[in-house]
Structure formats: C-alpha cells, structure tokens
Image (cartoon, rainbow, N blue to C red; front, side, top):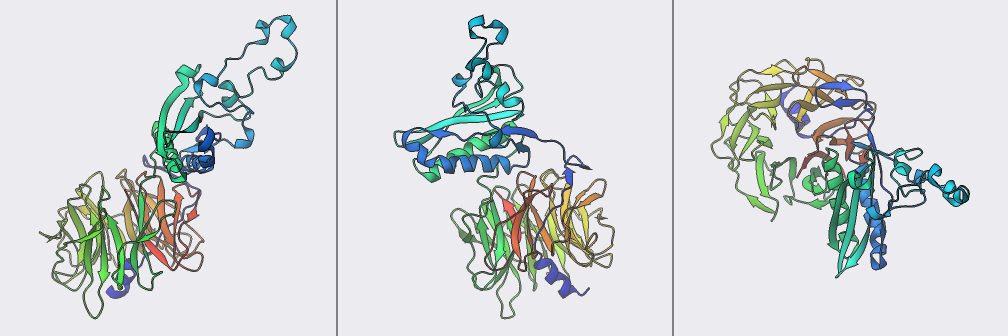
Length: 466
C-alpha cells in the first residue's frame, strides 16, 4: 500500500462496535459473568420537589444501568411499599410469635411487610443484592435529595446501610439531574465502578461543511464545536487531566499538516512548535500530561517523535526508516509505546520502549491493523483490523498485550475504526458507517448497550477524556 493511501486511511479512521463476548481485563477472554442486581425504585419529592423527580429518577437509573457493572431489577417486580428512609424498615413478626387472635387477616397476608423489610427486596421476585432509595425536598431554595444505599445481604438496616448522604442542586431540573449524578457516582464507587458523569467525548464532525473538532457529554448531549478553522481538523487528543486538547489540522493551499494545541477552560489556542517538515499528526499525551508523542515527516520519513507539551525539544523515538504513526503511550507504563507501522509489509500494531528499543509486533501480519488505543489498565489494546469475520473491512479487536490473546468485538456492521476507551475502562466510543454515514457510538466492552450519539453530518475519530 502506498504511503499516501495508508496515511489517508490512518487519518480518516472512524470507530468501534462490540460483540456479546466479554473481555476480562485481568487478561482473559471469558463469558460474561453474572452481575450484581440492584433495585432502584423511583424516589418521591415533597412539595415543589416532585416536579423535578422524573428528571432525577431517569438520571439515577440511567447512570447506574449504563455502568456495565450491575444488572437492574425490573420495577414491575418491586413491592407495593417503597421506603424513603431507613426508619421505614420494620422487622416482620413471625406468625408463631403472634397472639391467636391475630393469626388471620391482613398481617398474615403480608407477613414481611410488602416492602418494609430487606428480605422483601432480596427475595423473589425482586432478588436484588442492593437497594437504593430515598426522597427529595426543596429547602431554602435548594433541591436536596436524601439518598440511601443498602447491602441487602446484611441482617439489619444499621448494618446494611452503605450510603446515607445528601445531594444538592439548584431548584430546577438541571439541579435534580446534578444531584442524581452525584448519588449514582457514590453508588458506583461503592461497587468498584466509576461514574462517567463529567467526562467528555471529543470527535471530528463535518456538519458545518468543514471537518472540525467537537465535544459532547457521554450520553450525546451538549454537542459543541471546539475548533473553527474552516479547514480540515482531525485526530483529536485530550490530556489526562482534561485541561488540554490537541489535534491535527490541514490549513490547505499546499500548507503542511500541523498539530494545534488548546486549553479547555477557558477555550483558547496555545503555542505548539511543530518540527520542520511537511507533515505532523496524531498527537497523544503522555500519562503525566507533560509531553506529547506524534508522527512527523521532519526527518525524511513518517516516524514517531516525543516533545514537551508545547512541542519544544522534539526528538525521534526510533531511527527505523519504516512508516511509524499513531503513537500511544501506555497509561501505566510510560516506558512503553504502542504504534502502527508497515515495516512488515502492511500496517500492523507494534510496541516499543520509549527510547525506541525492543520493537515487537503484536498483530500477526494478516490483513491491516491500525488505531491502537490503550485501556486504562495498561494491559489491553483496542485497535481496528481487517482480520476476522469481514476480511477487507475494519472491525474492532481487543488484545491482552502480554499474551497476544485477542477477541473480535465487531462484525457484520459496516466499517468500525478508531476505538477509544472511556475513563472507566469499561465503555468504548467508536465511529461506524453501518447506517450509511459515519456516526459516533458507544458500547460496553461486552457488546451490550450499543448507542448512537450523533446524527448530523459525518462524525468520526472519537477520544474520551475527563
């Protein structure tokens, strides 16, 4: 494949979709394990707070359900009585302890209280392991949600309570959603997960007539344009702390591709010193955010450089004359870089030390492999590969780097490229042309909860950051 064709492929890659297999990020490919079951009945609001409870409950349920680490108990199975605070729980009295005069009637019809005791939630038909509940009110003009989270495996409310906290927001729908996000984040933290609230997906969109960098929330809301070059911008990258973004842009009129750097808050362009040459692209931040790796033709080839975050002090990582592009530094081991190279004849995924030593090919040389993306555990790479169910069309794979064991995540659904891990290490963003145009999607690594986030124009090259 010619250099120009290959580079065009690398620069315009799109995204991911996943199968029903589960990658165990300790290094094994396994069937999806049973998940802990959580019940979240709708919370009620006192007085003026009730008008905001639909937004609160939808947000709380969605954040927890979308986490990928729990299963949700269906609300249709819940008992009639919904507790609002721990004091609402009443231990049932065994029939043997009741006076004879009370051995019939309503008490025996619902001996466990119909929702008033933990076994009503942990036993059939709900069969939950955990219960989230509470209530909300407007106090002094502030939306206040009182949230509780119980481990139903324990014997009393005092022992079962894992969370008992207040969550505040403005007295409107936005404030209610903010409080729900915070409650959900605490629940997920207790279960070993991580909330995606507050993270952002940066991507390329041509909806204005030019390819520009855009940003949106993880659910696809609040889509906003970042760059306004009025020429081609692509390959966004975000710093580990979310404070900076970088991208590649093509000014046109014969001008070379260059890397541009921006601060996020406030949004403003920062200085980046591009090396001499007619091409510099695919920026990626090091785990400490102090340096950027990228590929450039500054030394009469397409090779990997590392520089200070402003582009100063740039130097070659490896002296090989083969094409080396798309560098990504391991988030747990900054001395290891994944990249794409055609040194074996076709583009394949490699790793090497940050000093250029010990290059190792990870993919087997069959087909073409591009777009490496490290999982936050530093042990797994997602990438696009034409090997597998649809030769000639890219699909997404995940590999355990130490063993080279891999699993195919997408199949029979258009072209899928440029996988991007979420900060929780469980979700991925991707772009796919399965619907005719390229759009951004998200999914769990199990291949479930696949969602389309964009609809306007063509959208590609997502990257997920804080």
